[in-house]
Length: 254
Ligand code: 13P
Image (cartoon, rainbow, N blue to C red; front, side, top):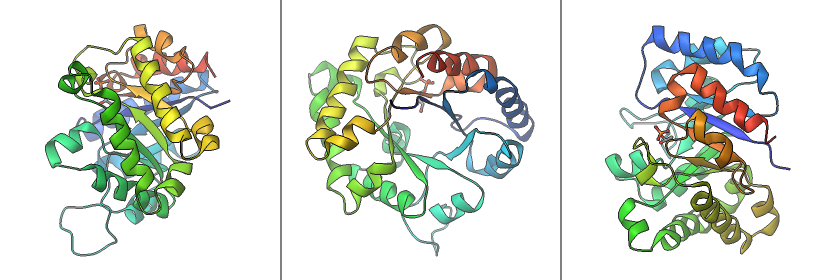
């Protein structure tokens, strides 16, 4: 049985004050979802602050990106060693916003996954098709290509043993459009089948989250699907009561 995961991707939002309030809100309510692994992923500059607040709790800390390089002369970048040093458990990798606004290719995403894993971070790797790709019928081709890049990378299969996959259709992110449970389930099943072509035990155990306009009122039906093991939550993770309601929806599956 795969343990459900609910991760809050706070993206580029917050202040020291609002981050403290949100963290405390999540900490207070999360006990009612004991069967769920809960992550919060604040912006880099608030990681230490949130790490301190989370001490002694079961909530995991994640970053939103990392460099694939070792420490050195890379102005503005943050490496896996630093994320470990400030208490991160894992890191979101390959989010469509990184792919779109920072030109991250499948190869870069794969290297970041391997770099994170090499330093003991859990990679939460995002994949997903754009609206145009869905409409022209290439969803499976795109998802297949993104997955193959992960599996073909040097050290990729090893890193995937520890990884979580997040299927985030780009057209559903921040748009209020959600994939229907059936649409999401179909892609999640495709992902598992694709991984099974290389390693069936890994395919059976890897957690595959859905992301894209998950809200308290649609989380239950999404998480009820066989291959949906939780969610990666954007907008709704910025409001503690909404995020906790989504955690509880995953808890009833767990
Ligand atoms: P929304 O939940 O705001 O659609 O964002 C999803 C997402 O991108 C999480 O990483």
